[in-house]
Image (cartoon, rainbow, N blue to C red; front, side, top):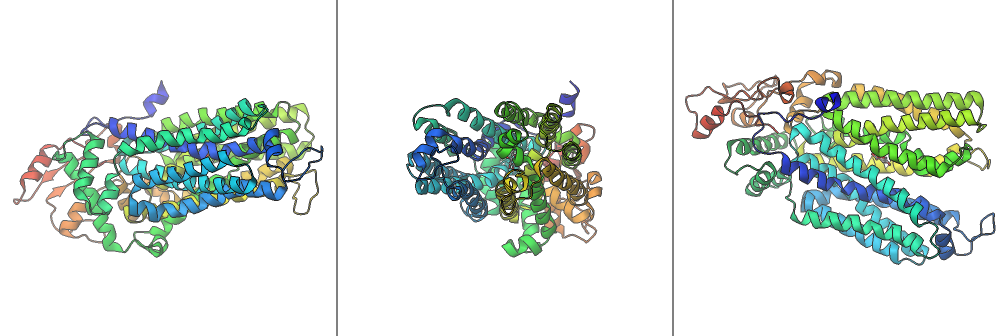
Length: 568
Ligand code: BGC
């Protein structure tokens, strides 16, 4: 099938095996289940009869049934978001100090304590404590999973592995919807305790696996543990620690890190003002994460059912579930083409597709009024489905991929944590604010009465997103994380980044110094010229030529491996 041909191609000249790294990356991706399940389950739980009866403190709804005060509902929903923002921000200091793996285990632990509080809760305050703790865990996981994946993956499949994380998020959302449907009619507290308790299963499996997984080699280099980094890389690449390809990859990561540190420190101030171009990169990550939320996806994910009810659609629950299924299934096309099509093109195509759907929905709704007639509903459902397809195949996964790639090692955890926190902030803002934007019935103060016209808002942001990607997002596929650093230094405009060919060796720079042109001033001992097109198998990945008479034994071995791709 053409799409498979377009998908992944492990270059023939990659030394060792990519299988261990792929399996580790896929396993860690399951952290997305916590994210998706936790954000997806609460709406259904809040609507359950038994839950409302058990947690009611006296409020009765319009049908004289026990329920929750609006302030209690807000607290239960919002404290998860508050927790995620805190978790995302904490992930950097923790991840840099304790390591990506140990911090992930800690985050899953905090998440589990939160889940236990929720299952055991018999009143709102205990539930809120549980939700906040679970939120801290989810926020931390949402930074550390893509960080972990990108720091240990081979470059030719790095994007796909991070996409698998998004796939888990969508599976978590779907699982939450299904579990709620299966339990909501149960007559006892089991109706809500089962969905709450199931969170622990995902957490348990992830924590168990993490106990035996390696720390990322890049983190270990950052902390100066070179031997441990070699061991970790040797497990991931299934190569002996003395293998020249492994020695070379490690040396390049280390030299790149030394080079970055020579350009400036790794403080929070540097994240915004440091070199090389850290401010621009942080802005790119935050912009992408915020725009991902402003495409309006969670309007459908969180309020889809209510919105379809309001629009007079028959079977709103079923339609919402179908949207969740489309969200899962449509992640696969993105996963297949992210390496061949590249990040930039996929983001631009996705934003165009989403903008067209949303503007059509909004225009049609404006022309025909929010009448809820049959035709309007078919059009509404069809275009929401196509919109979800475009989101799930592009902005859903690719934003996580790009934000896990564009930062240099020295500030990677900090920059990722800030950009992810901006995702959660907007996630919260939209979850909180959209009911007021959409409400056409109550005429409450603050309501904007947009109805389906809210899609004009999302559509407009999708157009902004196209321009943003064009101007800001560099193409990061097929090159190593260290080569991405070189790209940011040598390519001035994002729209020229596709044609970038890496040519620096950070080891050469360390040994020989470098000039502003990027060309090492002295005749290099070892000239490494990895080509971006190499992973398509069309050209030699590395030409290693020894030009100095002082060639060491190691260099001789490496130069004899001229056909091996030494840059992961
Ligand atoms: C977003 C979530 C969203 C999910 C939908 C993720 O990438 O960050 O906010 O709910 O995709 O699949």
